[in-house]
Length: 418
Image (cartoon, rainbow, N blue to C red; front, side, top):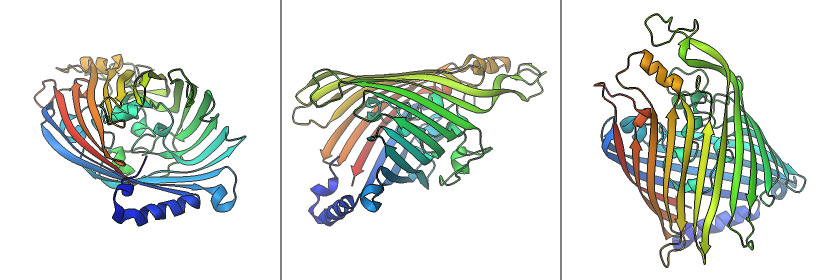
């Protein structure tokens, strides 16, 4: 993306410095996202927040730097500021912002990759995040709600939320194929818990992203990707289909029954959840361009996932939406989108609510989002955003025993790429 620095003459030396580094094989990227979000109605309580995130990323081409053919080093990290609207005001599963996290300075990814066979084989080793390559929708990236990135399906079910923002964890990834191939295969093994056995908030237990845990049960992920009409001169509408799975080899708590097979919510339970070995899930992603004409276009996306009910809070998940670019005359880089996401609470989790005599039983949470991203100058965009959250927390109760009310979310985001 063109940099805002090119629009500010006094910062031209910075542009020259970045170009000099690039000529030497080092790509430096710096961006800032700032946003104001509020829920004027619904949620646990009404309120507003300002969140910010600075990201610094460095890529080093080892062939240019050290004549090491096919080698690449990548590192990126965040300086996160502010408070989270979902965490403190709404109490929902489908996090209202994809930058929401406790304030800190945090390392994200740090890895080395070696490519071979004309870049059709890639081996990546280091601190990895699954959400940069797995379960990703190209068109879902426009939206602000965090579930359109690393979805609530994995975030709510995997230990500490799994290796997705704001966490990365030690791992190994193999990729067969490259961007010019119609078929790609991804396979990875991650340390299965970024924060370990944490009785506090996992994001505070691994506050700086430097725990580098290796001792936890592994998480494996695999994905097969098929892309079509991706070439610049292809006449057809472009698209991709991805089918994936994860397997976690740790122990998981039975959500409804104790070690004696008695309902955990009953008075006769011993209060110790039954232990279930391992977890798994399946998912699919479809990205499809549906219209293109002289720089304008429209596309849709759809993601669906499922997992066992006895050990996963969210056993079924679906999201999707429509995106449009260049609809406004003279503004080819603006984008508009409408998206939805639905997370179904599993029968075992609902059964626990029923067994314990809860006045409110969880069922599902759904989010709708309407957003418009306007480019002010190259490198700077402003994005007004509207969301509506149905059934925050899946339909949990508030302090008075009543179901938490559906929440409206209004926001404005500014993104600057230096």
